[in-house]
Image 1 (cartoon, helix red, strand yellow):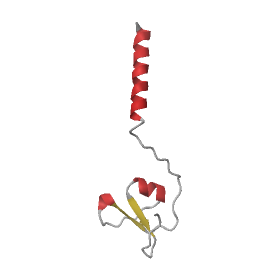
Image 2 (cartoon, helix red, strand yellow; image 1 turned 30 degrees about the horizontal axis):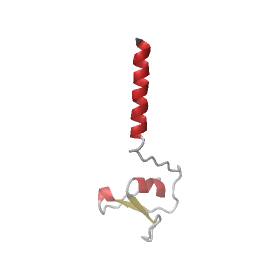
Image 3 (tube, helix red, strand yellow; image 1 turned 135 degrees about the horizontal axis):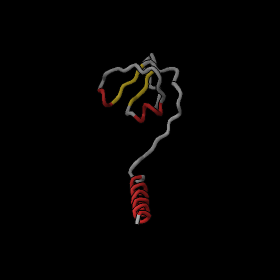
Image 4 (tube, one colour; image 1 turned 45 degrees about the vertical axis):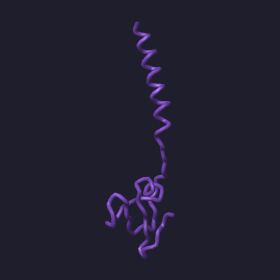
Length: 77
């Protein structure tokens, strides 16, 4: 009887994984710091200028942010 429960649980977890994977969009970003970033703005913070210590274009896009150089030009497009 215990093996039936394990089988049903395994099947249920497999179904949840297969259905759930259709709704999750994973993004894997490299782990390095963009050297020319002076500030960033994010849609969640409005026009507030944020000063990240270490971020890159991939990470910024995933957060809905835009990176800028000291002269105000955008780094990521």
